[in-house]
Amino acid sequence: MKLYNTKSRRKEEFVPLSPGKLKLYACGPTVYDYFHIGNARAFLFFDVVRRYFEYLGYEVTYVQNITDIDDKIIDKAMAENKDFHQIAQYYATAFLEDCAALGIAHPTHQPRATEVMPEIIALIKRLVESNHAYEVDHDVYFDTASLAEYGELSGKKIEDQKAGARVAENANKKHPADFTLWKKSKPGEPVWSSPWGEGRPGWHTECVVMSQKYLGETFDIHGGGIDLVFPHHENENAQARALTGKPLARYWMHNGFLNIEGEKMSKSLKNFFTARDILKEYDAEVIRFFFLSKHYRSPIDFNRELIQEAEKALQNFYQALQSVDVLNIPEHKLQDSEILQSEEDFKAAMDDDFNTAKALACLFELSHNIKNPQKSPASKEDSALMLLKLGKVLGFFQNLNVRLRNTMPDLSNQLIELILSYRNEARANKQWAVSDKIRDDLQALGILIKDNPQGSTWERR
Ligand SMILES: [Zn+2]
Image (cartoon, rainbow, N blue to C red; front, side, top):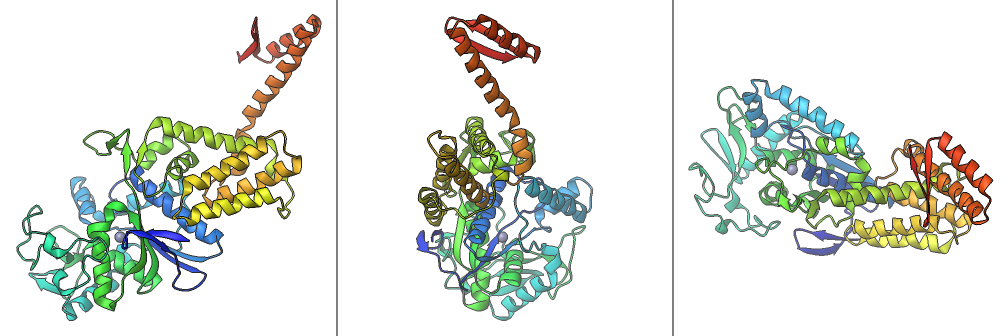
């Protein structure tokens, strides 16, 4: 398998640290609001990464954090005159609900920052003791100049970061690139006791602690959105490097941006959608299909037309599965070489840096096989079983029973078309009594037939 590693900026052969095991960490939400559709792309993509490794037989440990202490949470709590804990709890619950609604499987571990506070303080202490961090007036900063490898992930060197480049540059820092590990609390803010006084941790440290706690000093894949490469992931990696001399992860995977109708999503442009908004309009699998139809590293444009295409494509799969009554096919070993080849093609696509667009093409082909009248019934059934198997790897077909039941109206459409074709035959043979009876009987069921010189059309009353 080849993965694009942000660190090396090229595709690399994936070799796990321990054979047959995958240790995966992807940054979760900061719970101060409902998560937006761009975040949903990341959460859905790493859900697929996890599912695919499991399908390959890996024992996967997937850790995703919940950042439940952060400036944004505190700001919101103050604005709404609530306790920060209430805000964090409310949006953490909303996050879990929305992930479940999107069909995202629960990670193996989902720690919250406030649950690992003693470990966070211990880690900062070690950084201070090893001279990779320093305290100024109850704040603790990471000393970027102390680490030769600083910048190894993002390629940004500390010399490039000029003082005053950022808003309200902190005069306490030795270097503008130095980042906060521990922050002295202002009055009214939540506090934890530490060797540096009462305060709270910085975001970059939280993720290091939560990933290493469950995955060890170095793990296989660290993921997140492309906007997290710098400074978040660079700063996570720097802390691990300083502590252990080793990188935090071997492969860094980042998904691309999401635009809305060609524009950057932003609250000021009023084109900001939460996953919750979108789920009111579209089915979760349609959203999943939409994202997977594009390579994860490419930017994606969220427009209604593409979503509708995804909707149609998915409907197509369900109709195909419906047509062979897939739930009632007895389990058996698939042997048809053409069908087995589509599984190989699917794997080849996924092994090529998760080319899900190509993997979906394999699903289309199977769906086409099912609908192809020249195929034998056995071959149609086997194609359906393979479509089901591979679709599940991508996280589709999670509520198959319900979905197939809901696909039924399309079967009734097909039946009407069928009856109409018999009636056309009758008309062609001038069997007027038969054709009139069919028309009247259908009309009694609420189906109106209109005859015109080109043929007959129908509509529901
Ligand atoms: Zn993180």
